[in-house]
Image (cartoon, rainbow, N blue to C red):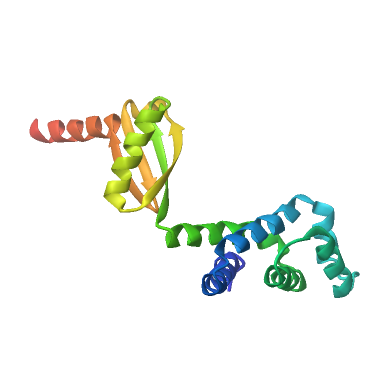
Length: 179
């Protein structure tokens, strides 16, 4: 399996354990704490060093990961033993996606020509929620090229309600008529 597949696989295994034990939020908190280790480059080098014994690496982790659950601690040991602690950010991202899917939450990247104010954002959110049947969290972006309306990307689906795309469609229709 390629390195790209590991975060998803690890996240799925952790999520299944967390779901079974009712510890979804605790695991997420622990993974966030583990993910903060990636900011300490010196620590990551030590954890990957063949010169340090596994016991020394465990001690380093114990000092940095105070308060995490025993299961998360064992997971940190496993990643360290397999030199995969560098994957923790991807694992956290995949885990969050699984939690969101479990909770019926979807993330939408909504692009508009001008910044959205709160009522517009809420209206678009309600519209997208009615279309998807999920609670929508909006990541708003601005692109003056779309002229007006909005473009939304939700879980790989593109909803294009932009004025630009409507004008382009009208142009295609009119050019087809004139022939």
